[in-house]
Image (cartoon, rainbow, N blue to C red; front, side, top):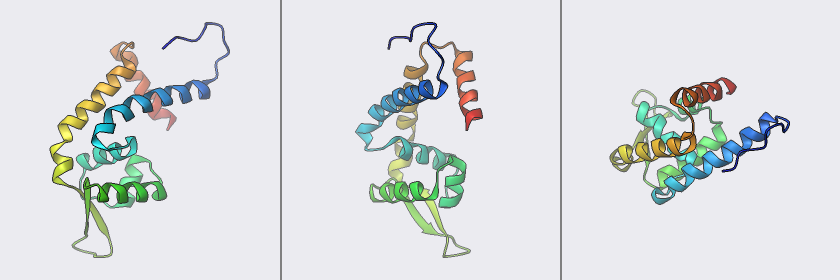
Length: 140
């Protein structure tokens, strides 16, 4: 991808948007064979980290609003990535668990995420990539 000319005014929001488009496109292409979206993958990551959470807990951890997460979880349930079970102490609460399919494909999917990250940050030195992630986290 060509670099912008030096001396152009800096519009951080525009550059961040273009970087998002590139990152989203790279990862989307890697997830397509699995029938997953970028957001669905992030949900898997969250559940690999801590299974059995509620939708509210997952949404808070992943910084996803309730409406978005509800639709994502429904589609993932329909596609066999997750399953919901009533909480043993309070049957009104649904806990979210990964299916065998999600657990079996974990290593393969994490490898796809790692390759997408490497493709995106390949021209950066390791310390620059680490700083980028820290800055992005700070912007959230």
